[in-house]
Image 1 (cartoon, rainbow, N blue to C red):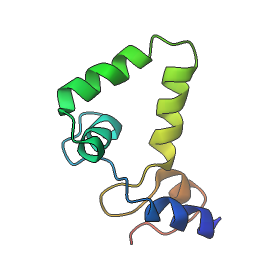
Image 2: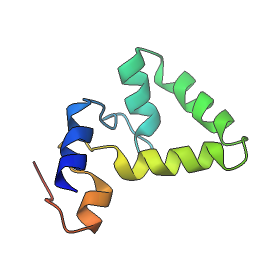
Image 3: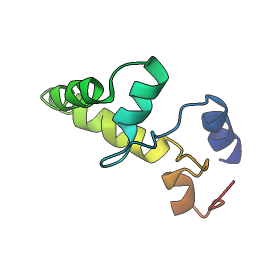
Length: 83
């Protein structure tokens, strides 16, 4: 499992520091160079898609590292708390 989490960290995508809930939209906006509010609107619109929008957000939420490199699902499985 450690290799999986280390490979996720190597991608370089992090939750954005300008977050409201999980920071996924802010991280996507930072990675793509889009306005954070436009990205938040697109994420909210994606929630209208049955299962896909909310499901994809939840998967991204548990697998996307925080700014310090910690991953929520890794912490649940007893992984390291900080990098």
